[in-house]
Length: 237
Image (tube, rainbow, N blue to C red; front, side):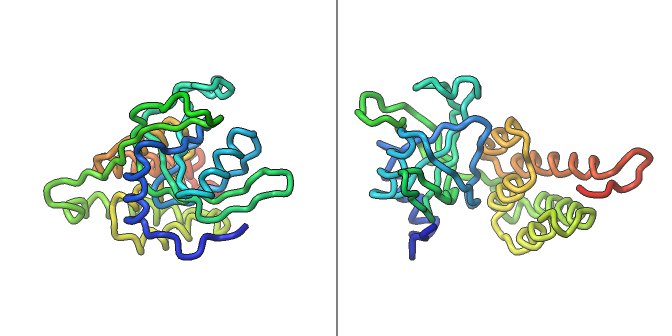
C-alpha cells in the first residue's frame, strides 16, 4: 500500500474540507463510525465505490464515512443516513489488478450532512457538508482537567487488568501523551467502544465535556465487565 508523502496537516485538511463543502464524497456503510484523528482501513470492491475512490485519489483524497440508519437499507441508492459523519483523508492506498482498492482513511473532522447533491451523473453519493468544531466550556480545554483525569484513570485501570496482547496498554501510553481533550475522547472511543449506537452518540456530541462523559461511561462498563461472578478479575478484558 503506497503512502501519500507529505500530506497536509490536520489544520490544512480542515481547510480543504471547508473548500469541499459543495461536493464531499460520501461512503455510506452499516454499523461503521470513523472518528477524527483515528485511522480506518477499507477494502472497496463495488463499482460505485471503486469510482468514488478513483475520483478521490485523483483529486483532494477526501471522503466521509456516513453510517446507515438501517443496515437493511444498504442496497438502496438513497438510503437514510445519520446526519453527522466522519470525514477523512486517504493517507495510503493500494489499487489491485482487478480494480479493487485497499485504503487507509485518516479521520480529520466531524461533518454535518446538509444536503445531498442529486443528478451529478456519478454513481456514488455526494453531499454539501458543514465542518463541525469541538465545543469547550468558557475556560477552554484546561477547564476539563478533572474529566480528562477521570478518563485517563479509567483507561489505565483497564490496561492494568488486560492481557498484554489486548492493545489496552498501548492505548494507555498513547492517551498519556495526548493534550487535546476532544482528541483524547475520540481516540479512546475508536479503540474501546464497539456498540454502533454508542459510537454514533459520541461522534454526534460536539460538547467535549459531555463527550468525555459518554466515553467514561463506556470504559466504566468495560471495567465492570472485567470482573467475573463473586468480584474476581476475569481472565481478560
